[in-house]
Image 1 (cartoon, rainbow, N blue to C red):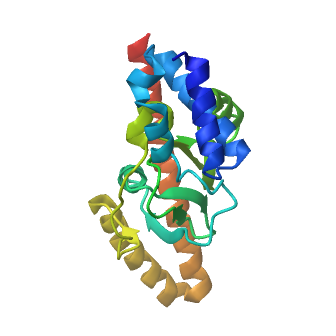
Image 2: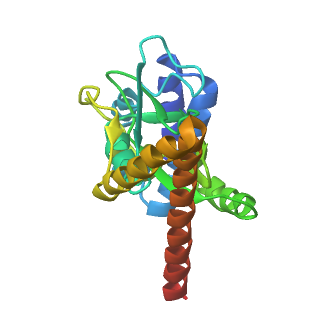
Length: 238
């Protein structure tokens, strides 16, 4: 079976399963890109077309149009722990739809036939924004949320992992929503002491200002560390 006939059969099977045409097109393009990188034949990489189509049958609903049966979950983590937890929850099928006003990850998951997701965080402040978006878009990364100087990007693992990107089963929705690292807990402890002192000395407006300032300073500090790490890694690669 040729590559074209394989994907023609895959598209037909997904269409029969009620998957929207836009999503079928995007899925086929991502899978073709994966084959171009791996150099493998489609049946060798993904297995028989009917079986593979069945494993991808839960790709619907499309972003922005979730079905009523989709699970919902909102959670957050500090800047030292967010990437690790995004990786964990992405492997459990949670897709980040957006970040809310409090910086929490608003997620959904299609029960029974979820996709695994991969995420990355980039500094996109100022002039870096256009550069980062231009670099990541051809690789299938989609901006799914912003917080302070950071942009969070997602893409389905099926684009890089093939059949491993589809999850036959998923664990239950976590019972907690806050995931803090040790450094995050230590910083929060310090901030609370400062905020309480600010409240006693300046009242509620002063405490709120100190809390906001602490969050902003933390973001700036970690973004500088991140930018320095990226430059160092780029230098080693030259």
